[in-house]
Length: 200
Image (cartoon, rainbow, N blue to C red; front, side, top):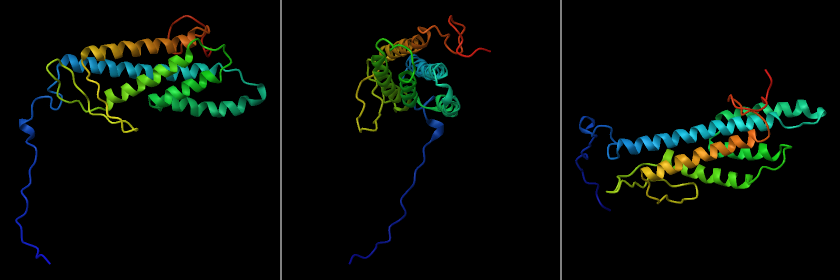
């Protein structure tokens, strides 16, 4: 049996906060990179708000048999509450469901829109939750991100990539609005054309 030797206590260390680079740990990327990332993330936030309003529009204009009005109204309030607080993935599922149970004619290429929304949600998670690594000489950075399926994100991202994503999310947002307005409804919260979803 080995005898326990008396070892001196290990020396401890702490970070010298005073000597960290300004804006650490974001100091290695350009201000233009962070602006592009911020604008892209903000556009995803606008998409989430738009999906919530679309869910409201489709659930508020759904035709319900007279005898089921009270029952459906009781279900409607929790649906609207979730539309205010759900993350993007949950909003997409609720949006898909609310369109599917609506009496309108099928929306052209709706399945493609839902597919594109889900793919965009995957990128949003990377952009919002990734830990950004040092950029290379061309300004590309691979954020450290592992999804729930243990897939490691490996695509280099630069300002051009971020601007393309931002534009794509803007297009998806407009497509969501169109699913409501093509039926003649005014998009909730807007001053656009169409009939108000709820008369004041």
